[in-house]
Image 1 (cartoon, rainbow, N blue to C red):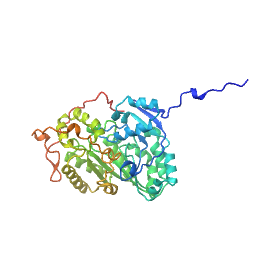
Image 2 (cartoon, helix red, strand yellow):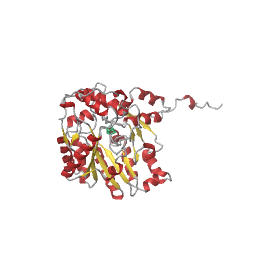
Image 3 (spheres, rainbow, N blue to C red):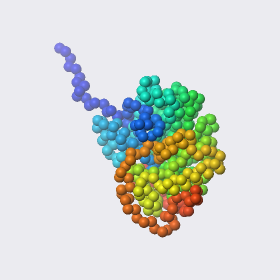
Image 4 (tube, protein in one colour):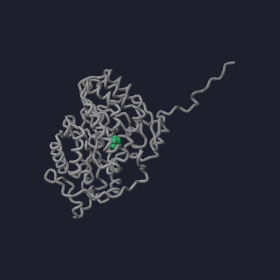
Length: 404
Ligand code: SF4
């Protein structure tokens, strides 16, 4: 008599997004990417981009890549009840930091893309800029274990005449010095380290899980000493928080001393998804600034032209004094088209125009006449008229467990 066969249909299907790791309150899911080189058309950014992960454990309060997670997750978890259920546990802005998707096959997909006839391989041959890390930090803690970025770099090192930019906050990038050096021999490579303040305690409040400013400066020194082109993104400058002229000038001097070739900068932009994270945080940590932000961002996602121009002039002068360039060639090329900043100007591109932006603040209350809340603009191209607010003690949000 023939033996009965097992009936596979009765077994539950394997999860499409298996949990591949956990780290305290962060859960990592494996995902299979179908494409990794995102075209300018698909992102609205003036360059090609690659993101090895979806989500970012560094959890910067101002990060507006959060909106990208929402879309990526809906697409990625589609049909995977387990992953979708896990994601629903958290509000989208928090899922961005705690539910991270690992594109485990990214390097194979990239290799196939570069070898294929797809339009992206043509773009690479034409040396159009590619930015690694626009909607996630490619060297966030997951990278230590999963090494997706490292594998991608190995593929990119096989190509020639690329224009590659890597954006990160993490000193983990120095692990990959040998492969970065190989890329720099065959292609134009620029590394953008993101650093918005030298103040360790302030950095911890604004970017709760990102590496300390000292660690980033050490990484900068090592990368520059290895002969790589490294710039620093002061992005975003947070009005009233990180824009003290003496602090910005000291930051420019410190990065110049550490070997940065240039500085890029831009002021905070606040679209809907980042408002949801940033403004409650501001209320908690800097309540005395709430009215000023209502005024500054009440009608749109950008602070005034006057502030932005004042900031630009100030930093240009600070860079001149420190003997480094203001603006990388890439940044100049992107200027006015979204920028290439990490976490602000072009991180994940512009959030699609959002007609709701500003609605909650439609009628900002008139500002009190106290000098503390008057201008947060640079006067005459560099002199700020108010001191930064006093830094209150850290108020911890019980929802946000700090420190890995
Ligand atoms: S700004 Fe960059 S490092 Fe910070 S959470 Fe967003 S993606 Fe991560």
